[in-house]
Structures are given as structure tokens and as C-alpha cells.
Length: 78
Length: 475
Image (cartoon, rainbow over all chains, first blue to last red):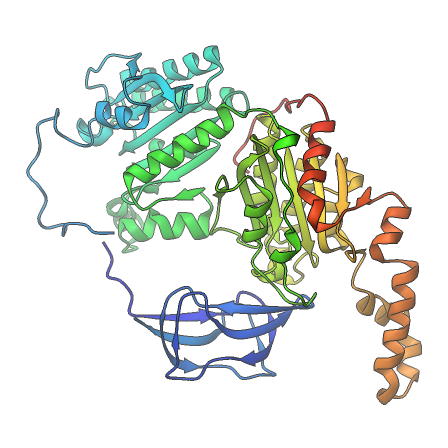
């Protein structure tokens, strides 16, 4: 069995504009929390965490254009 | 998930006590006391049986992982072919429990030939009887393609599916990879789409297989009187632009607690689920705005196509829940074959003969409008909620194209106001649900508070459910 990963990057699923970033480094998040609000396909799309953890880095700010696969937020998993 | 470290392998158990013994696995799968073997327990690597699943007659076979790691030789393969003949004769679902390294090397090409005969039997049975695979251990080569040919593939926590294992990969290409990364839950649940349902334990894997066998094998009848209305609008956010998770809506449409989602983590921008509706088995297909804005793309179109064709082959009515901004544009999608794969969805709906009812909740635009079981593709009935948009594209995007020159001429500070006026005018002429009703592409505007009964009545009014006469190729 592989080791459980200790950290996780939350990436953009598609090309999008960053509307708002709702977390800061050091914030604690639960699974399902919104970390970034993206705008794409004429929709406001919240990006949710899959795992609980602590925000270790925020890589984008509002107004940025992100490509598919770009890292938005990094987490240390709890 | 807990597991003993690989170094501390337990001593080999006598076959009677080995949990991998197919007698134990088949007994755990069927209703207690209903198992009846239909092949000899002779160490051939496969064992077949009939029995009941929640009272429904089902055929099953199981790898014998206690003998040569479940490798398949001529005799074992004949047991599987025999099980298929029985399933076709009984018109019963057939379930394969897999734990096998593939063809028996010692038997040479004879074993390959025998494995090929299983594939032939599976293909001939495709679309005629439901085929469900449960992969409980490593399933390599022939044991990988066997499940892959079937309608639904369920993976146990120890299940691994690959053409060849890590040792061969290393010797052929030098690539260093373990079984988990090569063919475990993450690659097949999320990336490849090989697996429909991931599970946390062998018991759960068998239970999910029983659930699917029961849904497809004992579909029941839709009792309109037992469909109660709930206010489904509660499942949507207030802002029309806001993305949301469609799962609660799908679960609220189906009878409580009956949703069995397939391909949950692969192409998650579309949700495909079997479940009961008024007691009858139905399939639900729903755009999920939370993922990729709910757009259609090449993978989601392919996923939905296969689901539609499976439901059509087994006479399962479809409910199509539409909230789609369009097809995902871009070079990645075009190179990925979004035109070819998107065409599969047009084909799947266009050929389907089961009742298929569409519900537009918020919006449906462009090519995706057609693909999501539109009136033009032969939908049984198309409902829309009040205020839903049915259009080629959003009104603002449309007028920016139609009135590009005019908008360039107006001063930037008043441009938003002009755009809003043009958009309102455009919506009056070209978009909006009233226009869609007028031209007949939407049959009826229904309130979210009476939608469940409207859907039930539409399916019931379609009369006897026909079955599409075609196989279910693993698209």
C-alpha cells in the first residue's frame, strides 16, 4: 500500500478567471470547503477541497487567468 | 482501509479456510442458502453457480485464486462460457467475481484460445442480459479484458486491473510502477473510466453488485400513486450564475436512498445513476455545474453515451436533468475528439427506444442543448422549470455577436446599459422558455413542486417499455 500523502495541491479543472480567493495561508479547511471562486463557461464555480487540512500556500489572486492544471492552493493534510 | 504490511504475508491457509476460495465468495454474494453450483469444484481456476439476489435469480462465476493465482486454462474458461449459456437461457443477470493473473502460461495458446471464447460469449450476451463484474484481487490480461467487456465494473479495495503487471512493465519499457498506481482505484476510478464503482471492502463490493443486479434484473413497475412531490427548487442556489452540486437534486428525484451512481469520479461534470422511481428502475443523467460548470466535453459525452445505451438495452427508462452551458471549447477538446465522442451521445439518444424524459432546470445552450435528449432527438417529453433558458447561447453573448458593430459605436460608459436592453429584446424574440414552448421544443413548463409526479406520469404514459436491440459496446 502506498503511503498516505501529507500534502495536496488543488488545481484548476479548466481555463478560468479567478473571481475571489476565500482562504489565506494558515487557514484550516474541512473537506468540501470553498477555497477559490472561479468564473468560466459564464458560471461562478466554487473550487472545493477534497480533504481537510491547513492552507500552506495560495498561488493565485483575484483577476488572474488560470489554465487547466494550474495550482490554486496547496494544503498540508491533517 | 487497513492492511498488513506486505512483508508479513500470512502462512498459506488450507483451501477450505482460504477467504479467496470461490465457494466462500459465491456464498457471500448470494442470498443465504440459495447457492447451487453448476460446474465442478475441480481446481480449474473458475467456479460457476446459480442462486438468488434479494430473491431474484442470478448466475455467477468466480475465479479460484487458491489455484495458480486464479489463472485461467481451458477447463476454467469453459466453466465461464457455460455460465453465460445458462444466463442467456434463464434471461438472468450474470455476475463475475474476478481474481486472476490471466491465461495459464503452461497451457500456451490453448489457454489464450479459451480466454477468447469467454470474450466471444460476453460479446454475444451484450445487451441481452445484464453483466456485472466485481474485481476482488489482481486481474491481469484476459482477466482485465473480461470485466472490461461487461456493463458494470465494481472494484474491491484489493482489486487491480491491468494488461500486464509491474514486473512485465519494468522488463519491457523500464518504467517503474507499483500495482496500485498501475491499476488501482485511483487510475481506474478517476482517470481511465474502466471502473464504474469503487468500494472500501470486499463485502461492500459484493453488496453493490447485488444492488446493481437487483436494479437491472428486477426492475419492478412504476406506481404513479406512490410518487410524492417535494419542492425540488430547494436543491438549486438562488443566483442563476452560481454553480452547485447536482447530486442532492438527483437523489431527491429518485426514491429516497435508492441512487446508485456509476462512474462517480470519472468525468464528474455529468452524473449517471441508476435508482428506483415510483418503485421502478430508472437511469438518471444530469449535468453537474459544480464540475467544469456542468459543460459537456469529450469524456462526459462518452460516459453518458455508454450509460444511455446500457439503459436502452435493458429497458430502463431515462430521466435527463439538464443545466448545461454548452460544450467545452478549445484545442485540448478538439484534439481529444470532442466531435467524434460528442457524436456518440447524439447517436445514443437518437437510437434509444426506452421512455426518456428531459427536465431543463436552468439553462440549455447550443450543441449541448441538442445532445441532452432534446425534442429533436426524439425525447418522450421535455419539461422545463419556469425561467429556464433554452437558447443557442446566453442572451448577452448572442447580442455581442449579432450587434458587434453597433456596440463598437456606442460610448464605453453606456455600453452595459445598451447590452442589457439588446439582451432583453433578444430573449423576448429568440430565447426564454415561452418561446421554446411556442415552437414545440419544450412540451410543458412545470413547477419544481410538482415535477416528480409530472416525470412519473410522462414515463407511465409512454406505455410498455421497449428494449433497444443492440449490444452495449464499452464505448
